[in-house]
Length: 139
Image 1 (spheres, one colour):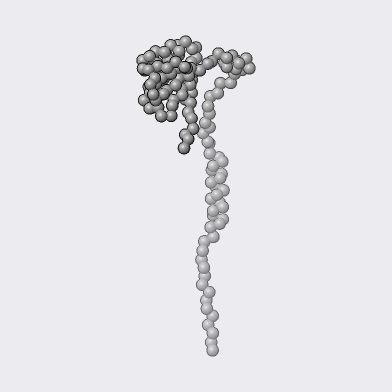
Image 2 (spheres, one colour):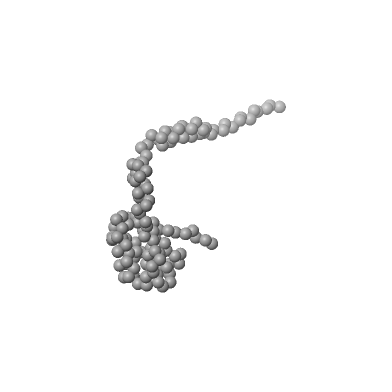
């Protein structure tokens, strides 16, 4: 009997390992050589310890509170029923301070409108040193 050898089929497949390695090296090279934009914030550092102690003792923040029930506005412990009364008192407090610093505390369920009116007033008066106190949301 005559035997015929079966030809083995050639499996042609691309070997991509070296190509992937080269692409990875090129990508890493490009990432390392690009000019990344550096983001920076201006920081005013006091030149001595005495400046820090003077700032701590002289600046006392004006605490503004917003409530959902009437009286809705407060500056420190003094509460106000209407916006015009509150606005007049706040403007006097801002004018009395050489560099006014405000801390705004709003109740969790307070409406947005009083807070927006207050922020618009502070923007109009160019008060930039403002802290908005927030509490964590509890389930």
